[in-house]
Amino acid sequence: MAILHPSQRLFKIRAQILAKKINQPITCGGVQVHPGDFILADYDGVAVIPAAIKGEVHKKAMEKLAGENVVRDELAAGQSPREVFDRYGIL
Image (cartoon, rainbow, N blue to C red):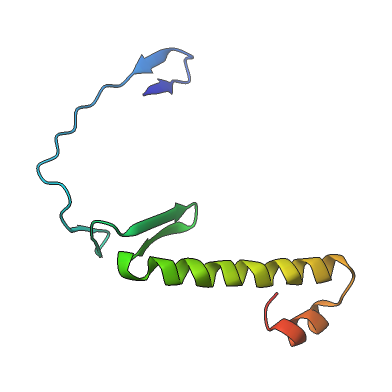
């Protein structure tokens, strides 16, 4: 990995990581993570979705996204936020 230092010189960092165990549950940030779990991370945080329910979570996320798209389209078309919220219960 290369890191650009404020002095504009390029340094190379080399690290060696040796795995002692693989496909074993771990605890990270106080949360148990098991092999096959889905890790979702962005600037706001990290979520661990257990493998057993990741299909259900994906389905619900897609339903939520579809609803948000409809709401955004109606707001862009000039509907009032109150009307849109009353109709869909989300903004």
